[in-house]
Image 1 (cartoon, helix red, strand yellow):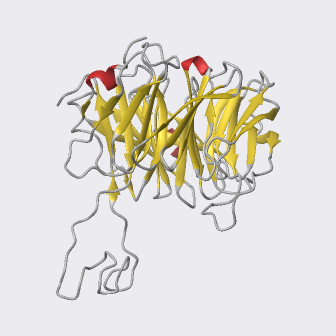
Image 2 (cartoon, helix red, strand yellow):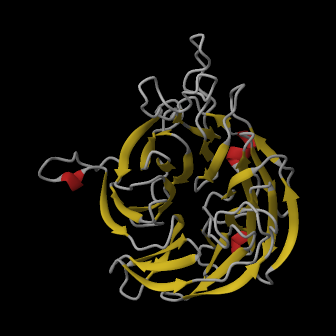
Length: 392
């Protein structure tokens, strides 16, 4: 299918948002039904929408999804309906209506839901922080089904009824005493094969990758494989490749394992030179189909991409700065022409007054607090865009 345009000739967009969220950005996602829209999830308890008018025209704020009480860690677009799901560390998932750009109306006091975005429902009752959400089809009544991952449980929600129709738990793999884990078996990601085999996959805190299968109406689900692919490491991300035949899983130690889901056997393993956190499939055919290109990001701020079918040489995307920020997430658009990534905020310049460094944990003892004892606001983090069409 060739090399995705963003990987072959993508250049940093200088008009990308530099102040997307206060604190870390945990997730980014291109809208499948309008590629001018981008969603991001942040530590500032909000998801934000961005309107990309094209290289040179700029990326502007389109809306803010507020209502969570803790950081928002995942965003997921419905493939056809104009709704967005936001998963939060507060244990809830927000479902938001998003207006088509160009037809949105301004919200008013009498009609607060007439703006670019509005909260439709809030799915509560998860056992823990929600680290995965993805739309997986339509239910018996025709309403969308949303899969969520929280704690050690997978939930299938029928949004027509705002009710759980299926729940799947699991027993964690025993880990060594003293190992640095959140909780054994915690689901840290959720990826779908796009309906190829109705599979979902999650990288977990016990180093296992758990694969689930749901029926055609996504009314029931079950665990079909528990793969101990990242023993001794913290699983952090999953994505499907090659038409859903290959599952890529990643752990924070930089290990990536590619598994053939037709046989549930590992194919190959690669290791990044730095700790990794985010990954995605990068389409190359122009029709949005899941191809063989895999991109990952990590603490050194570099996007590394490889063709799992081995027909092309690896590709690298660098930030256009001498001080790249560590990256936590990466996403590609439907055409493979743009790649977005985000993560931590740039380090603020240190200021001193003869008593040590202020507001940076220096010898003054002030640390994260200001002179009057108020906690210092986090620095702003941006979104980085590589665009095959833009070299501005």
